[in-house]
Length: 249
Length: 76
Image (cartoon, rainbow over all chains, first blue to last red; front, side, top):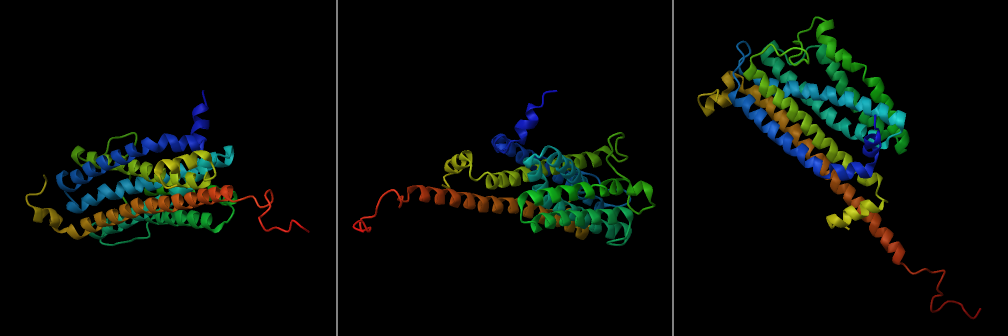
């Protein structure tokens, strides 16, 4: 296998130049998917025969929960890459993805609570799925504050990466909590092996929203990574050239 | 369109409060996620621009050791 792509994408300069146009595609696709998914889910999808229109919260809640877990997994993989191959860009990803992941986990918790009130009759229960997701939110906050509390950049990156690898044990707990314990929360809607047990016109907008959330994350994390690269590489000639091109120098 | 009127759409069959609260939470968190990187980028561009302006200032400053100043103590 040819590994040149790995080295190229590990180079901050290469990443910065390649994402210059790529980022507009991420933003554009996110906008299209989110607008289509939202309008479809809110106004065109049929209501649930048991839950009525409160079911429409599904179109925010499920994509945000899926994305929040995916971000954590991506951070853990990236942290491992950063620790093993000492790839700085991998650490930049971990550190810029963490605040996005925290905010998306908060969104999953908030929409879950709002959906819980009309469906279960309560905002919150100390149920396995809900509690493990709350733990994920605190793990994100812990990772962010750990990174901010260490002055030395390399030490901070290493500590943050190790925290990600430790925190990732919570992911299978969230994932299988609905199977392991008797919970109020329903099992997963979207699985890789089976089609959803839900009317097609109900789950298709949900899938579009999931894609929109992924694209939004790609856009946001690239935006943040590009700023961090500029700051880390501020002494390089190419950064100077970029600033001159922007007319800020 | 699933709803017959705009009023029905807003009411969401009595679940309007919950549905719109959830979508408002989404909007607020989306806005924060869009604003924060823009502010950070502006701050980074300022820091980097200051770094290079200072660099240029240093390189154009007269070299005090190579050239004697007009009123230096040459007769000592």
